[in-house]
Length: 382
Image 1 (tube, one colour):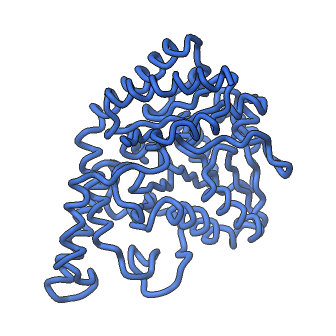
Image 2 (cartoon, helix red, strand yellow):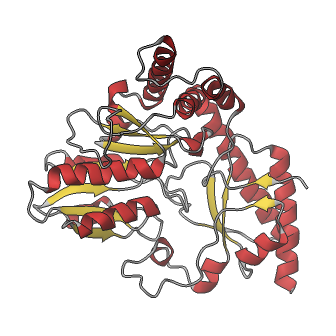
């Protein structure tokens, strides 16, 4: 059975050259980067080479990058590290976030709330976009931290980070963006975005799982959230995983070299998939967020009248994205993305996320649309 992988927004295959870059540090070059002998120096140089590659992709200074184990750790370090560094000097500090965020951001912000922060969650509009005016309307004198995802991991809508950051610059507010869905996929430059903190994950752009980084603008106050022997400017104790850092650096090098061509190719495949599928099933598809900018590889669509879960079960050869919950959670104090989009339970149930990437072929697009159309017809008649 040939697998068609349509879940690149969740994770990507590790590129061959990334695996090759990692191997020396899993075999003979196993020295600790803090050791004074030659093997230690080789490991330390490998880390700095990777830091340079990643800084080239992000167009920032290498010293502004902290290596981590992935996006979740980066998010926690950003929000808890800055939150604790500035929270003690601000009575009842205020944080703003959105209903588009990954669970890591939601959980870190919830921890800030337990530590005395007040939190406001801003909902997106019916296009899956955060309105800058809605952020501005909830700003307070005590607002000190804002976290807004660069792009929705569920529907791919790109958020107006630069405009939101502009609200922060004269107000002593620090802004973080979770860029796990954009680094290596579209241009993502912290200085142009105007952010103080930017988190990323290596496995989202063909690097190894267990690798990530946090951009911290020079001068931003941040405390370590773990304790031990200090590495990474004292912010990350523990022995660095040199092999994974080497892999992350190679993934960054690949992304920078092929970014423009990748955007064009993935966009073309995405649009071809949509067009071919509409022609095959004979009905237009509803595409979530289609009226606003989106990352090239994510397509969240509704297949009217069928269950996405049943479709996925009928087509085990195709790896789709996660199934959308049919009903809002009973404890949903803040509307979810799907509620903000105005989706009824039946429309939620019919939603499929397709995310394609470098490894997706034109033949797979043809095969997948034929298979999905056949399953769609069978389910519609059942």
